[in-house]
Amino acid sequence: MKLFSWNVNGIRAVLNKGEFQKFIENYDPDVLCLQETKAERGQFELDLPQYDEHFFSAIKKGYSGTAIFSKVPPIRYVDGFPEDIIKKFGITGDTYGDPNAEGRVIAAEFKDFWVLTVYTPNSKRDLSRLSVRHQHWDRGFLAYVQQLEKTKPVLVCGDLNVAHTEIDLARPKDNTKSAGFTNEEREGFTNFMNAGLVDTFRAANPEVTGAYTWWTHWANARANNVGWRIDYWLASKDIASKIKNPQIHAEQMGSDHCPVSIEIEV
Image (tube, helix red, strand yellow):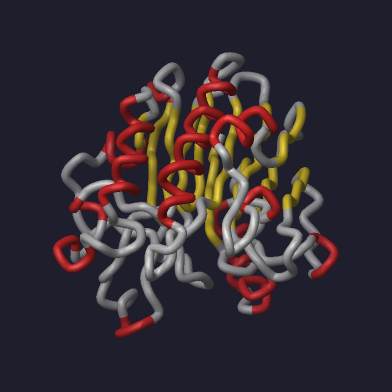
């Protein structure tokens, strides 16, 4: 079973470029999780009868949003955080808005595991959303994963908007105070690891450098591979041993992010 995750930075844009169609034809994923769809399902034409589709779009038009396509229809989909998580961790938003209204999390229950896709809030260039991210979102997200793990192992994927260690970005020394590489954000990711989640790519490739999933549009960064690894597949420790062939597909164009994938024995 091949599972892919891709921040498309606008599904309409990647469709108009023809890159989404190429992606489906080339990789034929069994499960595809998308982030930053920036659209509701009725805003574009796409005919993929082989897939069960589920979209969780932001209330704000053209913003954020996630989706899951699956050849095997899940038992159920769960959109967003449950109310007890929202209340316990105070995930209520800020001047930018309410992250619970931005279509950021979908959980899909399958027979043997959950697939959880996430588009983590960006801390912003001036770090003005860092406190929401660090004090509320990351803690609530981990608690939600642990809540799901009480029923089945969880496969977490998506744009987590953090490079965990220096090996995960091209210029760590220049970015110690940049969104995505602050001590607070990295600590949040370390907490995921300490809770037993496995970074599938790094577990299989502990010393591989130059493996990135996002590149800024500035200064020809992608062509020069000056990037960040901020898109992941994480796995509960109970299922991590069944994961194989974690890959970063930097050859796939169409977005400022590239797809990441794993395979699992079912």
